[in-house]
Image (cartoon, rainbow, N blue to C red; front, side, top):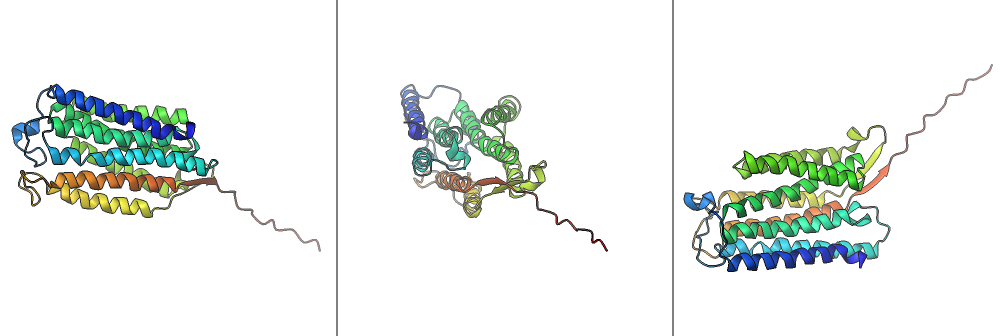
Length: 285
């Protein structure tokens, strides 16, 4: 059962998310409407009456949930196949489980927004993005500084607090706020590519196969163009269409999530032994 813990945890989160989704749907999604409703631009798709206000933008989010379940299953399968793997995603239970769960929550939190178009749904959507990206940032910190599991969890909680408190109190535009944190995360990726800068005398070797990372970054760049043109007035905005640009953004970013997982799976760690300096012997003549 322990080698299936990640999948079972992800499955439990999924079942709980479905139950909450159904419950709120029957209750009519209580709460104040999101400001985008008054502005007339909730990522283009025309709101419809019923349990799901934006069908295309909602159902496309199932990709995150499926990717999260696959990650949970794949982590367990790899643990069984490689019981002594030195990758952090496979050597314990925290990282694999956290990646799977944060991915699944990305789907359900965004469903809470697009199905309801409530203000609290929008907040949940933004916080789930911070949770996933914060996890990646702290994973890089863990890899650079060899943090123990408890230290990683403490750093993750602190990063979440730094991100969430301003969002709940003073920051209204989550898109700009999230964009800045993406840049901070990319800086941490640069440092991972140059671990010697932070080796602190330990001569840390940290390698990753970056092909999946570049594929994910390219996919995200394409999705960002689609996202920018999927607002009211954009080239890809047709409010009454069942094919929404913002829904394509969801699907592409679920794929990005899977590619980043593959990228992190390639991580290998070690310590470089200091090079031996030849000793010049004195000649006695």
